[in-house]
Length: 251
Ligand code: PGA
Image 1 (cartoon, helix red, strand yellow):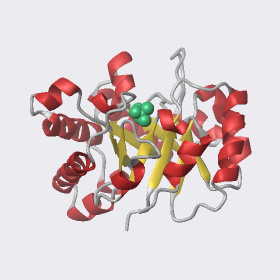
Image 2 (cartoon, rainbow, N blue to C red):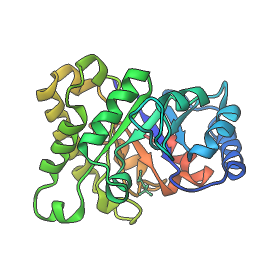
Image 3 (cartoon, rainbow, N blue to C red):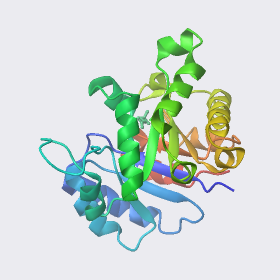
């Protein structure tokens, strides 16, 4: 059985003080959470402050990005060791905003994934097509290319520690969600690709989150789909009530 995994991607929002306020509200609302993994992914300057507050709670900490080198002259970048030292357990890799605005491609995502796994972080690898690709009937092809590119040269034992987030780019921050059926069928396609790359067992056990305008109104329906194991939530993770309701989805 795949345990549901809900993660909040705060993107470039919240100062450290604002992040602390949100976390305090979340801790109160989520104190009784069971049978669900929950992570929040604040911006780098907030990680330390948030880590302190969530110690001993069920909330886990993730970062939104990292660089694939260990250390050195890479101005502006952050290493896996730095994330671990501050208490992060997860890291989002290959988010579509990184691909679109910061030139990340499959090769870079693959290098980052290898480094994150080698260091013991729990990677959340984002894949997903843009609108033109969907309209041209290429969505499955693009997502397969993202999965194959990210996982190139990664062993089955390591791959088993990855979470995939399927985020159709046209659904991110737009209020348009993929229908639960469309999302589920892409998740099933991702499992088929993983089965071919690794094994049916890995494909069955790996968690696949859906992301793209997930909110407290559509989460229940999404989570009822057989291949959807959780959500990567942007906008709706910035308010404690809506994120808490998402975490407490009703199956
Ligand atoms: P959204 O973002 O929920 O605001 O659409 C999701 C994401 O980009 O991870």
